[in-house]
Amino acid sequence: MALLDLPLNVGFSYPHAPSFSTDGTLELVQITKASTQVVAGVNYHLSLTLKDASGKQHEIEATVWARPWLEVKNDAADPAWQLTRLSLVGDQP
Image (cartoon, rainbow, N blue to C red):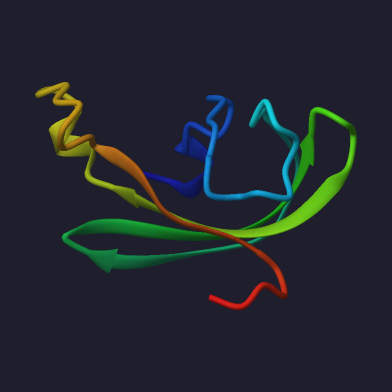
C-alpha cells in the first residue's frame, strides 16, 4: 500500500494530548515528513502540522501501524490501522 493511500482524511481524537482543544478534533494542515518501516505490516512514521478546533497549529510526530489484511475481519479489538504514537514535537516522553 502506498503512503498516499493512508486514510488521513479520517478524523480521530486522541485523549492523551492535553494541550489540544478540549473537543479533540484535529485537522490536517500539512504532512512535513513521511517514511515507512516494514514490520509485521508497515509502520508509517509521519511528521504533521495539525490544527485544533481553536485554530492553534501543532507540530506532531505520529506512527500508524498498518496491517491491511485485517481489514476483512473488521475487528475493533485488533484493528487493521492503529495510531501507535502521537506526540507534540519537543515534548518529553
